[in-house]
Figure 1 (cartoon, one colour):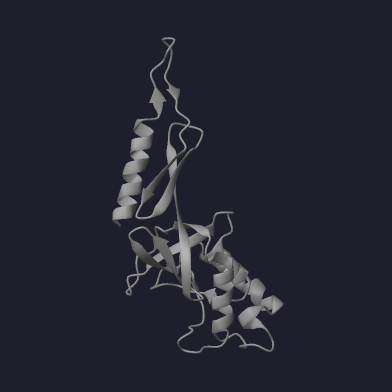
Figure 2 (tube, one colour):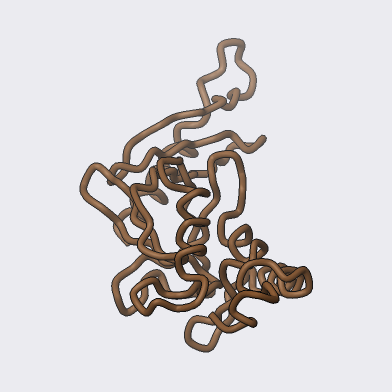
Length: 194
């Protein structure tokens, strides 16, 4: 939560400092701000959005995966566990069907790569295990949560009673994976039961 507060403060600072005094007596010109800072080991990039505001993006490196829906980010102040929102993958420790394949799929997608961690305002920030609940986007823009569901490595999941804001998109990807027989839904696989 402190990291989010720092991001908001940094964003306001960027907006407050976004214009230079005029040199010709006219209106102040906005500064085209692209700045990097470090917050808890995550790179923060402030990008101009075409007006006087700035948008903060947080990138972290994925150190390792725990299973097909949980991973660990490497930060300067330690490790941060992240549980991917909107999906549920088979558990490795329970030796569930397709668990190894799901874990390998997540590992191939993210380990060693920079990812943007995006919370969902409709969901809790952390779960009962103190894992950060978030969507992940790779530095190349790939939506990791959706890629796992579309590949048949996870099914959609509603945390508590409120579906996440991208539940419809994830459900459509799951339906397509089921119809195509990918991953969990393969005819010779788990028969749809993770």
